[in-house]
Amino acid sequence: MTKKRVLVIDNEPASTRMVRLTLERCEAFEVREVNDPAHALTAAGVFRPDLILLDVEMPGLSGGDVARRLRAVPGLRKVPVVFMTSLLTEGEAAGPLYSEGSRVLAKPVTMAKLVDCVAGMLGALCSPAKIFQT
Image (cartoon, rainbow, N blue to C red):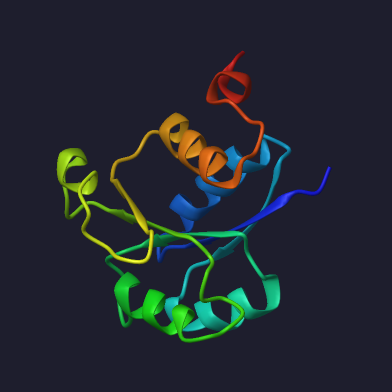
Protein backbone atom coordinates (compact mmCIF):
# COMPACT_ATOMS: atom_id res chain seq x y z
CA MET A 1 0.00 0.00 0.00
CA THR A 2 1.34 3.42 -0.97
CA LYS A 3 1.06 5.90 1.85
CA LYS A 4 -0.49 9.29 1.20
CA ARG A 5 1.80 12.22 1.99
CA VAL A 6 0.58 14.94 4.35
CA LEU A 7 2.53 18.14 5.02
CA VAL A 8 1.65 19.92 8.29
CA ILE A 9 2.58 23.61 8.45
CA ASP A 10 2.12 25.29 11.82
CA ASN A 11 4.48 27.44 13.90
CA GLU A 12 3.66 25.41 17.03
CA PRO A 13 5.93 22.32 17.18
CA ALA A 14 3.71 20.62 19.77
CA SER A 15 0.73 20.90 17.42
CA THR A 16 2.53 19.55 14.37
CA ARG A 17 3.99 16.70 16.40
CA MET A 18 0.59 15.69 17.76
CA VAL A 19 -0.93 15.76 14.25
CA ARG A 20 1.98 13.76 12.82
CA LEU A 21 1.87 11.09 15.52
CA THR A 22 -1.90 10.76 15.22
CA LEU A 23 -1.95 10.47 11.43
CA GLU A 24 0.98 8.05 11.41
CA ARG A 25 -0.99 5.70 13.70
CA CYS A 26 -3.30 5.15 10.73
CA GLU A 27 -0.40 3.60 8.81
CA ALA A 28 -1.93 5.16 5.68
CA PHE A 29 0.00 8.43 5.85
CA GLU A 30 3.55 9.67 5.68
CA VAL A 31 3.69 13.01 7.49
CA ARG A 32 6.22 15.82 7.49
CA GLU A 33 6.20 18.86 9.77
CA VAL A 34 7.21 22.45 9.00
CA ASN A 35 7.26 24.93 11.87
CA ASP A 36 8.55 27.95 9.95
CA PRO A 37 6.21 29.15 7.20
CA ALA A 38 9.20 30.57 5.31
CA HIS A 39 10.35 26.97 4.70
CA ALA A 40 6.94 25.67 3.59
CA LEU A 41 7.46 26.10 -0.15
CA THR A 42 10.82 24.32 -0.15
CA ALA A 43 9.50 21.50 2.03
CA ALA A 44 6.45 21.04 -0.20
CA GLY A 45 8.61 21.00 -3.32
CA VAL A 46 10.85 18.28 -1.91
CA PHE A 47 8.17 16.20 -0.12
CA ARG A 48 5.46 16.47 -2.82
CA PRO A 49 2.45 16.13 -0.47
CA ASP A 50 -0.94 14.79 -1.43
CA LEU A 51 -2.54 17.17 1.10
CA ILE A 52 -1.41 20.15 3.18
CA LEU A 53 -2.68 21.02 6.67
CA LEU A 54 -1.98 24.73 7.09
CA ASP A 55 -2.39 26.97 10.11
CA VAL A 56 -3.86 30.36 9.20
CA GLU A 57 -2.26 32.51 11.89
CA MET A 58 1.56 32.30 11.90
CA PRO A 59 4.30 34.89 12.38
CA GLY A 60 5.89 36.30 9.24
CA LEU A 61 3.75 34.61 6.59
CA SER A 62 0.09 33.87 7.15
CA GLY A 63 -1.47 30.63 6.00
CA GLY A 64 -3.13 32.57 3.18
CA ASP A 65 0.27 33.88 2.03
CA VAL A 66 1.74 30.38 2.13
CA ALA A 67 -1.23 28.95 0.19
CA ARG A 68 -0.90 31.63 -2.52
CA ARG A 69 2.81 30.83 -2.90
CA LEU A 70 2.12 27.10 -3.07
CA ARG A 71 -0.57 27.58 -5.71
CA ALA A 72 1.87 29.58 -7.85
CA VAL A 73 4.04 26.45 -8.28
CA PRO A 74 2.72 24.25 -11.13
CA GLY A 75 3.50 20.94 -9.38
CA LEU A 76 1.78 22.07 -6.17
CA ARG A 77 -1.13 24.07 -7.58
CA LYS A 78 -3.70 21.29 -7.24
CA VAL A 79 -2.63 19.93 -3.86
CA PRO A 80 -5.63 20.27 -1.53
CA VAL A 81 -5.16 22.57 1.45
CA VAL A 82 -6.99 22.28 4.75
CA PHE A 83 -6.74 25.52 6.70
CA MET A 84 -6.77 25.22 10.49
CA THR A 85 -7.67 28.30 12.49
CA SER A 86 -8.86 29.52 15.85
CA LEU A 87 -10.16 32.70 14.19
CA LEU A 88 -13.43 31.04 13.14
CA THR A 89 -16.13 29.04 14.84
CA GLU A 90 -16.94 25.56 13.59
CA GLY A 91 -20.07 26.94 11.89
CA GLU A 92 -18.16 29.71 10.14
CA ALA A 93 -15.47 27.25 9.06
CA ALA A 94 -18.11 25.12 7.32
CA GLY A 95 -18.93 28.00 4.96
CA PRO A 96 -17.33 28.78 1.60
CA LEU A 97 -14.59 31.09 2.89
CA TYR A 98 -11.66 29.93 0.80
CA SER A 99 -11.61 29.22 -2.91
CA GLU A 100 -10.07 26.46 -4.97
CA GLY A 101 -11.56 23.65 -2.93
CA SER A 102 -9.86 24.41 0.37
CA ARG A 103 -11.46 23.23 3.57
CA VAL A 104 -11.33 24.93 6.95
CA LEU A 105 -11.19 23.28 10.36
CA ALA A 106 -11.82 25.42 13.42
CA LYS A 107 -9.32 25.03 16.25
CA PRO A 108 -9.32 23.42 18.61
CA VAL A 109 -9.99 20.50 16.32
CA THR A 110 -10.30 17.02 17.75
CA MET A 111 -7.84 14.50 16.39
CA ALA A 112 -10.77 12.27 15.42
CA LYS A 113 -12.26 15.05 13.27
CA LEU A 114 -8.85 15.78 11.75
CA VAL A 115 -8.26 12.12 10.87
CA ASP A 116 -11.76 11.86 9.41
CA CYS A 117 -11.17 14.96 7.27
CA VAL A 118 -7.74 13.87 5.98
CA ALA A 119 -8.78 10.27 5.35
CA GLY A 120 -11.93 11.39 3.56
CA MET A 121 -10.12 13.88 1.34
CA LEU A 122 -7.41 11.39 0.40
CA GLY A 123 -9.62 8.33 0.11
CA ALA A 124 -7.58 6.55 2.77
CA LEU A 125 -8.89 3.64 4.79
CA CYS A 126 -8.45 4.96 8.28
CA SER A 127 -11.21 5.48 10.75
CA PRO A 128 -10.74 7.54 13.90
CA ALA A 129 -12.22 4.64 15.90
CA LYS A 130 -9.38 2.38 14.74
CA ILE A 131 -6.58 4.64 15.93
CA PHE A 132 -8.16 5.80 19.17
CA GLN A 133 -9.17 2.41 20.52
CA THR A 134 -7.29 1.23 23.56
